[in-house]
Length: 185
Picture 1: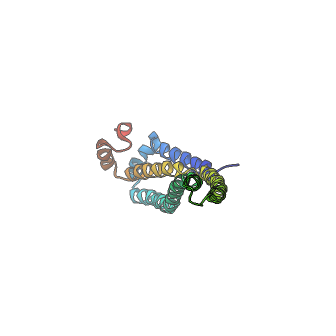
Picture 2: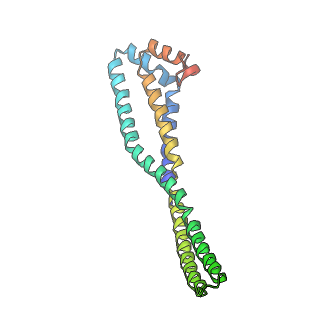
Picture 3: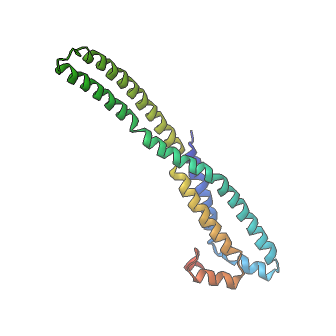
């Protein structure tokens, strides 16, 4: 069974593969071919449409990425709650023991605080199980994949932008440290 992280990994691979095609000799010659055929505007329009689709995909993915990152942080923070609740039980039990040593007639406090400790330990265990479930669910999503795919989308968008430049402008852009750098120069 594929996880969301697996699907995002496959989408990232697809985006990276498309970007690799832009680095081929054929793709690098496309702007010059379009100029020779006097279809530069149509070529730029086509590349712009691809850029629009990528932008819409990225815009749609961003809120999902933010939600996954926030969920990851929330699960991380939630992980301390079971230990905190358990520590409260320990504190209640220790308080009962201390009150019993004072000989002030509060000897029954040991039994009462032991019950509180037991109840809090039960709650802590349930919270620990819930934390494990949340961590397992988060592993299914794999928030790190969102950042990887967003980086790949930005790289592909930049390379598409460079591709639709007029050939002399494209060479100048690449000469100034563009993504295709030394591959095209």
